[in-house]
Length: 427
Image (cartoon, rainbow, N blue to C red; front, side):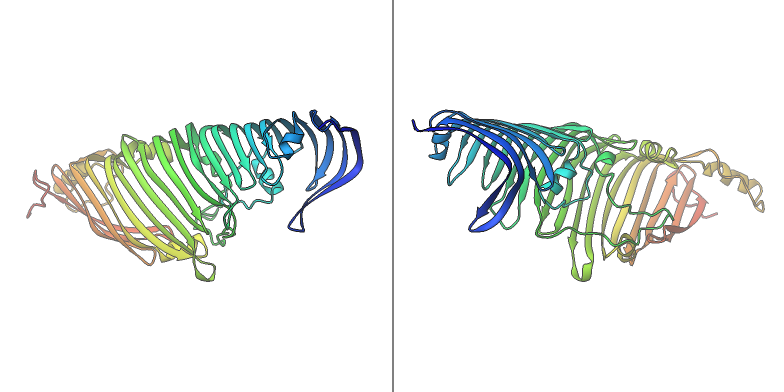
């Protein structure tokens, strides 16, 4: 420990890391100075080097490097600055056969996507990964890193929680729990390939799928508020599970326009490059009038709705999946109204002038007592099996089909006068 060492300068040097005799990493064009007076004294390394095409600065200080090399903890301070990433670590480190670090970790980047590319990590999902920073208590080893007390900023959202990245299985595994006050889904999903093209039809582009040997994800996420454009939700709780190429995204609970929403989406790679899709949506008491105004800037129906939808399909593109869809959907209303149509007024005018045609019916409102629409979906076509609207003095029965893939709908409405119970009158 008392042996004298000194100061070593590296000029345009290189360093190679081998594991089991195989070269795994290389540092090029190293210009650095190592100041280590004696074996037992602190050591400091300052300099620059190239790693995977990036020129970065490094500053490393070890309080007792001799103890660290013997497998005992030593205080460590590390700073790395590069065009892609800035990183600081301050804690205790152990070198040798089982390297280990415990302490505070701070990192920031202008592009999390560029960092993943630098680390040669496959991007498993088409998420927008822009500016990011983290501050956490880290526990790192050769098998992975655990981040506790995590403060994470990603794009325009801030998260708290814990993350764990494990490297000791067939594939890297990222798991954890994150919570945020505000989640901007449009910002997060802005790199998602469009489902509908500019021509107004479902995209015929092949759905790119991830490398099944890449990163697996098991993530729980909660948000006090979440928005997609003008659509707002509160108290959102969901999960994202990605394993061996199979994606499962679930919305356990969310408050949406005075109601609640639950949903589940499963996408898995199938044979011959196809994607197998299954989806379930359940909504209770959602104010579809307010939802319509926020989503489309207008609404044709208002009221609290209960929705159940179950569909599945398979295909290599969104268009192929839409043409293969099968399942069932239904929507039930209590009291509500149809906007832009006054059925009672139209019926009164027809009673007075039975042979009149071309009546202006696109104005006014029609309150109703109940409404139900149910459809069976086969081969991408939804056929109404039960569709009725009942109100004071009238009853409406609907029939028809909707071609989901071509985004076309053909409906026939039979409107009749009814008694106070909504049953059609014999006359």
